[in-house]
Length: 495
Image (cartoon, rainbow, N blue to C red; front, side):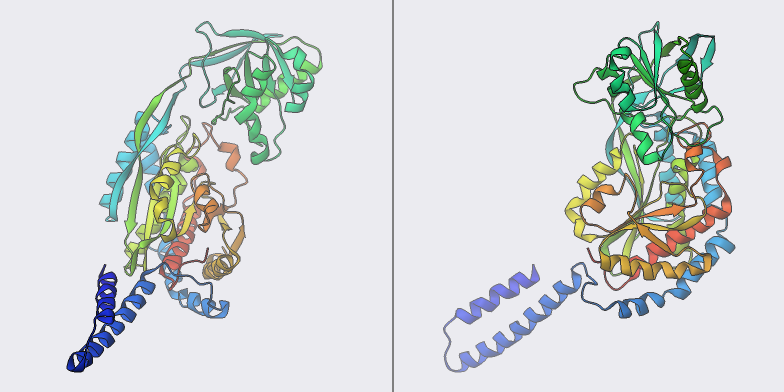
């Protein structure tokens, strides 16, 4: 507003007819206004989001290296100092108190209130809740019993958004297939039957398609229900749940996950030519969307408070286990990172913002609404970070961004050499930050030694027993160092 007013006066002076002493006065005023205009332009340029595009990497490397002492202070506090095991203890108290937190449930409401109060009591800044609408699917009572060729109770977990069966259940013969391709070839055999998928585990990214799409593919060939082998490389007769999506225009049939052991057993029976009959009963239903919140806390930036480095994890979980690993760990370290920086009396140039997402499991619902609410300020988002693949021993970061931003992030990761976490890999992961990365904002996700992650994922095994305090200390240190340094650099990461 100030610069526009100066500009207006300047042009009025320039166009006004002047003579004699008035002309000399006019020239003086004009010169003063020109100086003010230049100052205004400089101030406006200074306040705009900055970029490293034109700066040599050698200079950036020297700038990042200056943070070595601060990085070591953060590491010492998190791994060896007074904050040692704090993220683990916070997570344990939270999960033991609240338990699992499925989207739309009273437990998720309790979890949000718990975290809101805890973040405020921790002395973090601008703690607040941002409203969102989220799905509310209810599992209800469920069971599956194999009646032929022998009586056997199957361990099952209904899949998110599944419809229920009639109250008396569905009793039907089973057809076992190993793939969608086999189902298509045997389509004529599937009508009126329960399709059992015994797909092998290749990788989560590839194999999860059976959980997500299995019901609709079975319905297309006339099946009355589908049972999917749990998407896991390891099982102790434990079913794993997850969200599934009905395809538009396709009949919606009940669907659940069964254990690896039961899927393999029925496959062996089918190969022997034995007739398999199962009775499936599910009271699952989808209720209207409910009001919920994303939970936010900050350390406000000292020079550019409008510019943001965002850390995150999702607060909801499945309705089994404790949701300690998925994603209690990501929540805990995203809180802990701010606590570590606050404890050391540090205040970066840009704002550090922790967001605990609501309703990630149904497909990043809370995060998608946050993006819509904040995308008008997208140029002020410097880096978005998400931890949702476990807080096991950290290996590095997965990163999406420009070549120049990647080069800068490699320099930042060198500050973690003391704990041997320097790797910067391709492709930042994360349902809750994906839309930001697609819009060009640099994104990073925590990469850990996660070989056991899918052993416990979406199952009753996701409890505090999976968590390790020493590993969480290291994850917290990585999260805090990266977030602080990026937020305090002279310029924003280049797009």
